[in-house]
Image (cartoon, rainbow, N blue to C red):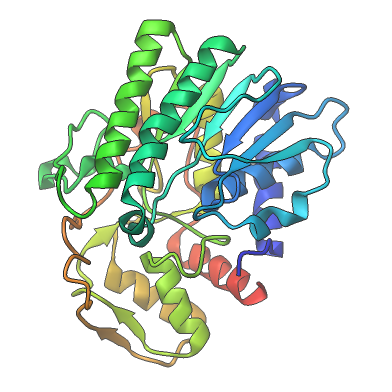
Length: 351
């Protein structure tokens, strides 16, 4: 279910149209996009490809992925285009683009708990060494802007008074728990970004996504929305491996992609920006009930315990972003959970 769908095409075209003026600064430039076959990277690649279409001076895109967790078939429809060069490369090693690079979208990484617990050292290496390789590249290339995608997981389990969570919250994170390989390496990656900005003037901006979901996400990703979708598609009960009370602020991928591009193009270098949807902080049970209603799914919601003893270890109870900094760039989320789940389900069914 990794193929591109009409829903993805619609989203990409809408973003390209809405952000046409902002994107014009990229005309004639070369953009390095890492994690190009992953969930977030592939969406950005579709947006840029749509925006490029028919332009006399399209941006040239270097699309990198090592395909450890990314799916090449997700972007197969873009192969053969003159404006996109696909490169199989592991960012744990330095990358020589062989041509000047003007902008970087760093989306490479292992973000699903199931996969980063399977590949803990690879997760650390791409977050730390991979990010540093790109920051070094910025020092020798005419890079005008770099977006490094971090995560809201750097906040850990915020104190109640720190919700909605601002970018200056220092976090409450375990450095040895089952999520530490991801959380702590992302924290260090942000430290690297700040140091390179302060020491060398590297124009890097940091985005911290909050629970992004939508079409194109691996159905076997094992995060909550793909798991719920699998149950609906199979006509089975919707199973929650918890009591369903933990909350998240889910952000549909179209809104997230717009936020990422806004940070890249208009964000302040050296700054971190929360990105997500601050309009709906919902419990896992509410999300399951919304999908059940949207899908007309007749099966019940079941609450069970995961056979994995660490499934809920260090799992935050609440997550909601303060988006004041991002909204100052002109961003506002548009897609609420019912519409987003409906579009996601339609995309999975089409795929």
